[in-house]
Amino acid sequence: MGKQLQGSKAIVLQEKRLSRLTPEEEKTDLIKGYVEKYAAICGKVVTPLMYSIYVEALEDLDTRRIEKGLKEYLRDGTGWPWPGTLRQYIEEEV
Image 1 (cartoon, rainbow, N blue to C red):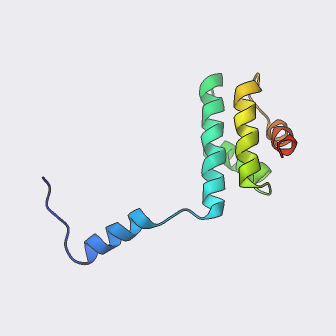
Image 2: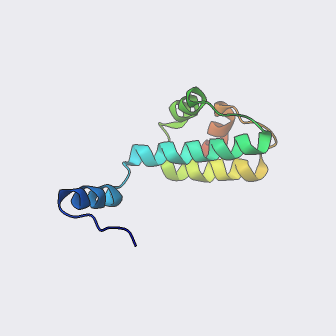
């Protein structure tokens, strides 16, 4: 087994593990995760700029609705989704 951390290093590491994402970070991670899934299906490479475009396009929407709409597109979509297409799926989810 490895050596146990002692003192302030252990406290800092423990705090990092306990820290939670902000609601904005959770939303960003959710959007990025689905963009990665769509990219995997379509054989696309996603760049940081592409992630930021999708996050910007959807950031004003409720996280719960975003998740439902993105999941719905994953099930029913037929190609690489433009941000506007995803918005339509999200806005249809109530």
